[in-house]
Structures are given as C-alpha cells and as structure tokens.
Image (cartoon, rainbow, N blue to C red):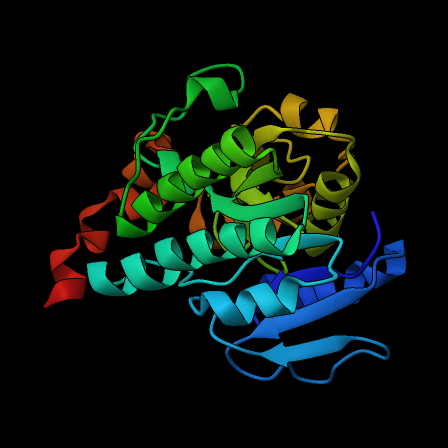
Length: 272
C-alpha cells in the first residue's frame, strides 16, 4: 500500500488519537475535517472539507493508499441530520475511494447497529450472532454503513473493514464501559490491523479492548491481526465504588446498546 491514509473526521476524538498513533506505526496521515485540525503533526497533510461533498472527498482521496472514515454525528440526533451527515457521508467516502482508486477502506461502525440485541447470559457474542438491530437513528446509520460497505466490496472489489466500536474514550467512566471500552492505544492497534491485513474483502468486527468483563468475541478482530493490550478492569474498583456493581437486569446492561436502547434516546426527544 502506497500513499498516505486519508482520515475523515480527523479533528474528532478518535481522529485525534489516530493522527498521533498511526504515524508511530509507519503510516503517513492526510487529515480531513469540516473544521481545521488542531496542532497538525509534522509532515501531516490537513484539508478542510465537508465529507458530504463528493467532489471534495474524491479530490482528497487521490493518491491515498487507504481511507479511514470517522466523520459523522457521533450520537443520536434528528433523522434529517443523521441521514445527511452519516449516511450520505458514508456513501461519499466509499464512492470517493472508488473514483480515486483507493482499494482499502476502514469504516467506524458502532455497536449501536445492533443495540437492541440482548447481552449474552453466558459466553461471548460473535458478530454473526448480532445481526442489524439498531437502537436509534444513529444506529440505523451504522447499519447503512455496513450495507454500503458490503455493496462496495461485492460490486466494486474494494476491501472494506467495518469496526463495530464499543465505547472509545480515554478511560471508562461507567460500569457498562467495563465491558465495552476501547482504549486509545487499542484503537490505534485495531485500525492498524484493519489497514494491514491482506485482502480482507468485506469484514465486520467488534472494536473493544481485551476487557475481563467483555460481552463480545474478538476472534474476528484478532484474525485481522489485532492484539489488544488494555483491559478496563484496572478501573473496576473505582467505578464500582462510585456506582455499585452492575445490575445486569437493567436495560443499560441487558442490551448491547446500553442507554441508547432506553426511552432516554427516543427520537421524539431529538425531533422536538
């Protein structure tokens, strides 16, 4: 693979992590966001464009070796906003890659694509055990992301890896995160593996750290070459002291999507 990795949504939380971590693993980065990135790294290309502007994203993708698509609304919102920014944005990323001749695309999916799936009572949940069952409009956009990725892999021969990301934060802040956390370091390791794995075709994999209390099976992610190094359990004592032991019958712990599958995230609250 030659050429830089084009990262959309590069000014966001995960984008900032990748802009620091990918160069340490030998990747040149070309950053794109609707706002300027803060403190560009030495040698980093940075572009300002709307990721729903197909012509602009196609131009940004020319000469890139891969595209990592992070741009979008990162929580629930109104249907028009989600449909335009997240679904149209994903189409533009994939179509831009196709037009610019970029073979490898990594898409930032989400556990919320299958958020109404019950947490397993025992064992770990494989991707195949969690078909599309979105918990929000945001989750619907991540189902659309997986569908578009599959289309572009099958019809146009792109290599597309969708990462069903859990809770990507600097550190866990809730007891649910003891199961769903994806650390910054493991975020870099996962994306690096998705970029390096030979000829993946179309893959959907869970994106979490090696958490002791994990709900999700990392076999498919490890098959890409992902070797997580972090475990949310180091935060367990403090979180349980603050919040109590997780009540597994509570909807926040009973379904994959956590609070997104509760009334708090009903679309009426966002459309009002």
